[in-house]
Image (cartoon, rainbow, N blue to C red):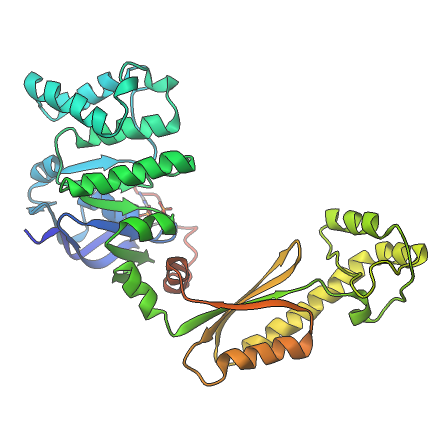
Length: 388
Ligand SMILES: Nc1ncnc2c1ncn2[C@@H]1O[C@H](COP(=O)(O)OP(=O)(O)OP(=O)(O)O)[C@@H](O)[C@H]1O
């Protein structure tokens, strides 16, 4: 079998609302597949159809070679699911939870005796098998969940944000585990908002947006497709007051404390870089008095630069963030358009010479995600909830 999962025009409507629209997707057997998309994109609805929790409105899907509508019981034997919110019995021990799951799948005593310790060893949770779930940490519970989901040796394992909320070390242990499970021949469907996790683990990635499969490729293939976009990052120093031209400069020892107090008010602070030791108390008092106006003036300057940059037809999008040491402009420009980068830089320099650094970088999976999902959702506030 080449594909663990194949969908054919798979569609789900909640009332009139199309949650999944005509999904055609193939997931290679024994691969790790990253399933991405913004909140509400339709991932969970798709997974629910593939795991036979809800029925498609139209279209079909096969999982492990079985049709989800015609042979749901066969599909259920082929799959395991680790939900986002761990669903274990809190008053039972880890081992008791796993045994319950084994009973659900009809394993006999010999099978239980063989598989439970084996899996507990594999995910390194055997040491805590007699601990009550309510006394376990998030990472320990997640591992018990994984053991429970694997007890019937499913071909296809669905993991819904398996590492959310875990510390970096436990995350790495789970990443190793996911790779190891894949080495053991399990196909893994990984829903995650962690781009690093997806990029590191997944052979292929599908990005859902507004109920449709908006992109599907290897992580590198997705990034290559974005190569026409070049990300330009400009870090501007805090503007000096002299560049705004409102105040005179004289010496003062109070400079640092004023700078600090302005910092706490989240107002740009490096207003003093012409000659930092050269400000009079009157001047500094004046700064404090006018700090609100000053920050508005600086914002207006930045807005003007942004407007000028946006007018260039080689620019896809611009964002501006205030950081503790200046303004960070992130500008996506057309890499292949003539002079695209230099035209943008010319505007930034002309309007404001306070440039600290300018860098370009290649697209990341996060850039791909933003690009693919930038189509905005319609207002869905009036949609009725349909119980399934
Ligand atoms: N039972 C339901 N009744 C009505 N609408 C629903 C129902 N379940 C989901 N939806 C809607 O279907 C759309 C897709 O939801 P879904 O849960 O599949 O998204 P998702 O991609 O999993 O999002 P998230 O990342 O937030 O979990 C959303 O707009 C959601 O509001």
